[in-house]
Length: 276
Image (cartoon, rainbow, N blue to C red; front, top):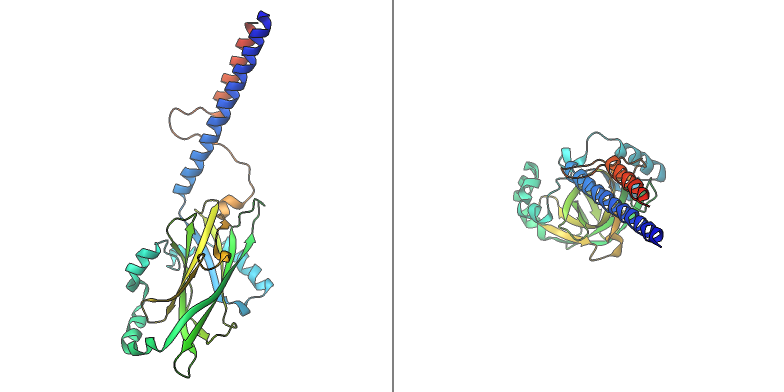
């Protein structure tokens, strides 16, 4: 009877140690991921053009080039990582000198047209580790112009933003200027984006702000509030998406390494067995 009691206590102690080890290991991994997120800057690269300019072959070439670029958009001012509020408060910084001159020369013409984004959609493109989260995606939107003159053309550009799991909108790309014509869908614009680093595995919403060239205010906007196609996109950056063997590193004082915990469990096991 005494032997059975000792055996039961021994099994319980080992299970408790194993549970403790698992808990510490998971906590250590979570802390490591948090430190990795904070250490890596948010870097991405995007390419945009009219959707009709892309075919499957060209789209794949762009994706391949994006993945191995040495110049993310954050280094050439195509992406600022600023919040939408910050950009709206400082939109004069985004306007180059020629745009400001054009604004002063043609101020009265800005009210000759109304703009809208008729529709937008998204496509998930690359998921190398097959975990359901993608490092490459594209956003397609159709901007329209309703002019009160005979000229149904508008020169515009768009700022694209991301919101991670409901957090503030952050700027991730500014398109080049492009022309839209009336209500045509032939001017649909596509932006292909690859997350290079600093974007943790999560769900991201997309917002598009449309600007008329030379005019400082937003003329149309479209977001996940308008369509589910821009809502909760499962995304992560390249450093999370590649398949790799993970090595657990211990950060901070007072944490036990894997070998230390294994030694404790082994010694405890033999000591408890010795008491039988």
